[in-house]
Length: 292
Length: 98
Image (cartoon, rainbow over all chains, first blue to last red; front, side, top):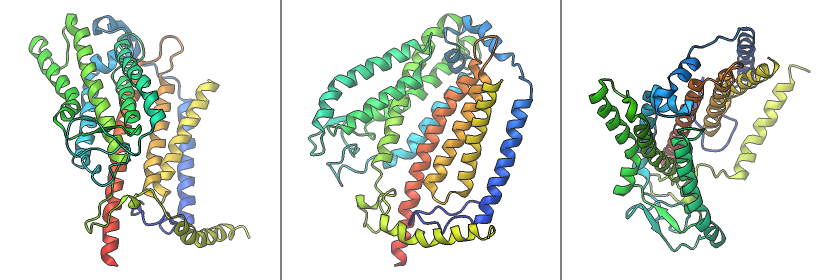
């Protein structure tokens, strides 16, 4: 059912036969119609959960029901989610130190050593963007703090705030003046602080209430804020690491032929048209055959 | 009712388009995009079912969508990263065979 991934040329040689694709479309279409019919025809199943959340909201330490669910009632989910994010970060980390040596002028290059944030003089700098960012980045940071704080009462919270911070990081890199090093100790601390804090809180509250992740009533609000603040930093760091790794991914082949020209996403346009055009005409012919 | 139906049709439609893409798209990047389209369909359905006429929307479903989005981003990042690795390896083997 799944073919081997094809990177060579964006060719159609790897495509499923026409008949198989039609069959897939028909089966998926039928399933879709069935599902739509089932969903529309069934009566609304009323769940007791929303009422329960409203009822227990005063005990959660926060006023926003979504935050209450995320960080109190179902904080297990959030704990595991931060674990998932960290796993992705760990998978990418060994590769995070590749590229300022190869192309120091490329904006967004990670440094292989040094401090978390370093200011560089780069030929790829973008002065207007840089000047604008001097105003924008502090505002984004303030906004992220506001999002984090407001999450207790209104929509907002750790993820939104972390995403904003990561966005600030991406902008800083695009200016060409800032480079990050994710193998530095500070970076490692930032990447893991969310999970570490969360686990420590989980175990800590277990000693008083006897249940893992069940916050004592009077401490719920500060503990949620603590966990959220730590999670924000980790989420921002992990998102930025993912962006950096993907944006500057250099595909090194063992034979040392690798250069920036070998990007996975740079297809040779001429190759594509040459290889795909005949196949395409062939396919359109076969497609028309049954009709004629 | 009609508005709900519209959202249901749209979300199932997105899921179907994504599913077809995962099976039939030849290129791995398209498969990754297709998986993302599928997840958007699922999130849309969850948000639609969180709607409650009598009271506030179901916060449990909203929290699930929020968690889902973050996990989907992490999954996509990992998938793209692995796609890059596959590309590097297949290119290397291609050079060896020459």
